[in-house]
Image (cartoon, rainbow, N blue to C red; front, side, top):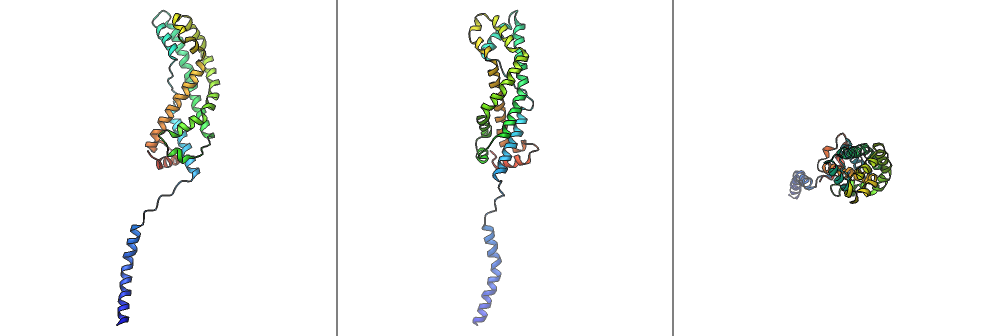
Length: 231
């Protein structure tokens, strides 16, 4: 009788075991997807930011306005018989900016390649333009030092300083309201404005890529890395 009872219990255990195993398996959390290594995160962030820079600055079209003091003089002269002088200054200013803009993009790409990112994960998990802010803070001074000589070449070739002085000579009292100082610092002004606008565009591009990693076209690694921290 005892032997018969043992056999019945053993058979029940065999029948129940698969169901118990199934229940235990179902309760086990799903296995998390494979994570990226630190190097992969860094490579994905840098290559993604490189794509963003290309998309944001590829056209090289930045619109930099003249310093306010000179803009006022220019506007006043444009309503007089000296409008041609104001136009000459405006054309020279735009020409210098157009020459420098693509050069700025190239310098920023170069700075990105040399950038030592200590914690890519922290940047990826940061704000919408955390990587752009980090790049600007880390490489900003070096970029300005490299871009300023190029700005000086561009303003010299367009005769910007001379045209600015010609405009001041016709400005009368308006020349005393910061006009002379603005003309003397046109190189620094253009350099700073081009860099500031470039980083502003890159920052917008980064925010867009974080929201939609598919914007990082033809960059599979960057798309996957940005998708991990999608905002």
